[in-house]
Image (cartoon, rainbow, N blue to C red; front, side, top):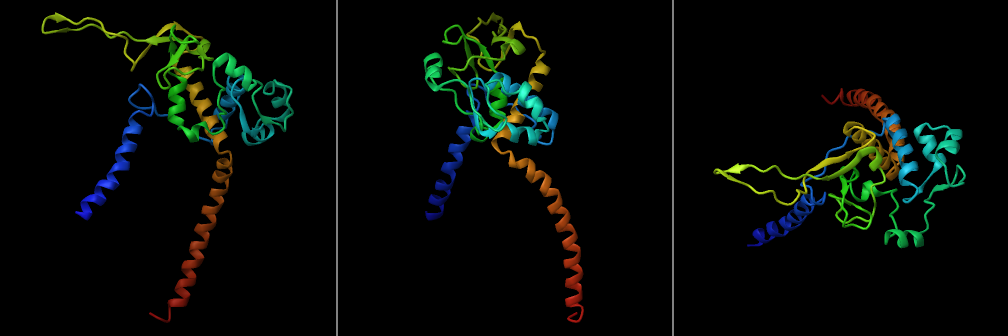
Length: 255
């Protein structure tokens, strides 16, 4: 009886996490996979460019400084000043949004969250899927909705790239000789209502780059760990050789 009770108690959290994971991406069954590679510097640079041009006006990254980002991603300081700082901030300032919280609450009914830790709070897969699943919704205040985050206050700021999507109507099929009437739009698929400036593959790549950059924002020291980790492994490999030789020298008389 005691063993059975222990198994039940151990199973409860697992069941809870399983249910939560199933609904992780809102109306979608699961999040889309995304390749995160913090050693891909061109990807991080492209993601940074997208972030400062389209995200930073509303969302802050208030735990990151412009010059730290430039040093980590190989962006020269003069390029930072010329093409990536638009609010009059200095290169050593934190990446804070220019939008005041009072204005945000008046315009959007809520203050946009800081994005420094968004991929650690959610997940890279969640962010990547969210960015690609906006669709037109005339019933919402902004005119947009999202499959991953239903009734989100954020408008689709990148719709000129992606185009306008809408929920796809299922195709009517005959069953037992009787036609099936069309039902409401599905929540699993979106179709293009108006094409954008980029193809679907190009937009997916840009959102992967942006997600990659947001992962970097959440833990910029990971780049240093990658670099230092190589030297640590080399040291351990060399140390192992000397440790093995020393062990043989100490134990040769015992055997």
